Image 1 (cartoon, helix red, strand yellow):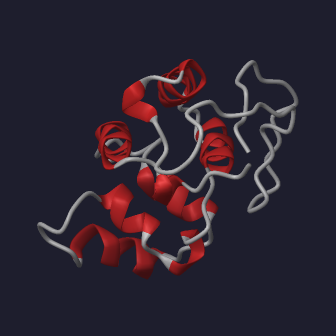
Image 2: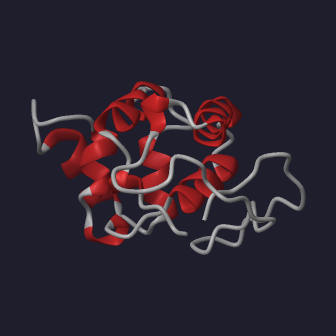
Length: 135
């Protein structure tokens, strides 16, 4: 089952924004955007073009390049941008079936896969990881 990030409950996406809407220069929503081939103008538009709408990360999810963005792809991107803290938080909640992390209309337990650490958008590869990847 491929679960789209867009289909996660709003509370989950809000928690992800707390981690990813940071102004630190690395490991934030901008690096995820770059992984999905958004150019600097598109990234700047997300950063400045939607004042008060909602988070940068959630605005990024509305971009055409991320319409079918899955939780597995998000975890792979988090590996590439070196955010094990976010991976731990997300996988712990998904694999434990916490009620906060239930998916709308879907099982609250996510299957695991050995496919991990390879971004289809860049030639980055992590040969080993302890993080399970939902698919």
